[in-house]
Length: 268
Image (cartoon, rainbow, N blue to C red; front, side):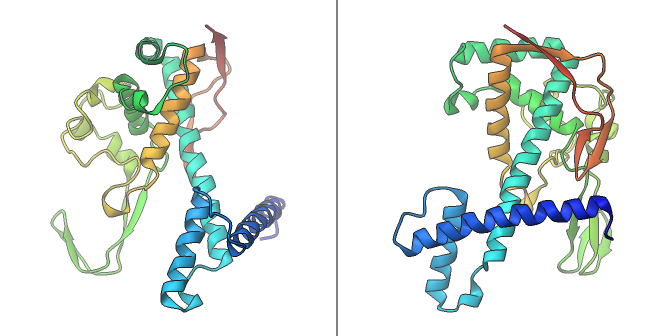
């Protein structure tokens, strides 16, 4: 419908596609002129597509420019959205639980001091990892996942024919006391002290990025990105919720604080 909001969304989409079309076009031209594809997602995508077409000799088997543009939109928005939402909820929760903020700061300062965190050190952040897992349990970016049966299969004693859509209620699973215990609604990172598989009564109950062969391919990247960001914030700031903050989780594709995250920072 040609509403004001839809017209604005359409305008924004056209602007984004115009920018991406220019970027892709320049990169394709550079490749034709023999320049390096560059070691980034767009370069790898175009290089893979070119090799695929060359090997099969039929251009229709490759991706169109429109396909590449859509993939770039997915890289950018899906990659940024999940990380920013996780970082936002982490700062909110650590503001609510300053004792865990202090524990995270002690671990981070012990590993890095005030130096910029480096990759190997990020992988040794056990307390921070526990905190992020618990935030993802309480506030998963996607509250449901949809899957479609490709053949007749039996799930939980029920036989489903091929072509059935199954909705996985991630939020309900993450907040089920029969799976996580009586403290299911409390922020308790200690439940992940021995890893994800032992955090609950069901090793497959933790689903912030999906599960199985269709699990989000960017989950490790998102976690490393968030660890880097939260480490640098905690190194330099103490933070708490502003009086204006109202806790209302709200889903718009991903789960956001409905009225924003008003947080007070103090340099340390």
